[in-house]
Image (cartoon, rainbow, N blue to C red; front, top):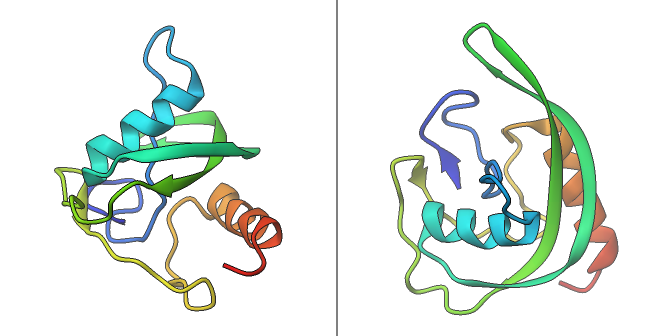
Length: 119
């Protein structure tokens, strides 16, 4: 998804967001994908966790980014949201170069590629 909002507006990103109070990260992953893209996913295994920084205006927060492997149940309901200006699918060997939050997105993509070499 291409981000509509700062930080990293205009850059490609994987769907994600912050946990609500008491919400398990796996539930957050499913909710955020649905909110941002309209897609329902079946969550697979934990891919990994990476530290990053979330910078907005003068506020810098350290984040723990928990990434899961998931499968889209049906790609047809995909839609943009207030946080997303574009949605697209990319071949694993043709991912965009302008990625938001590269400190955790790039290692997550590398881990996904290592886990699923034939996809």
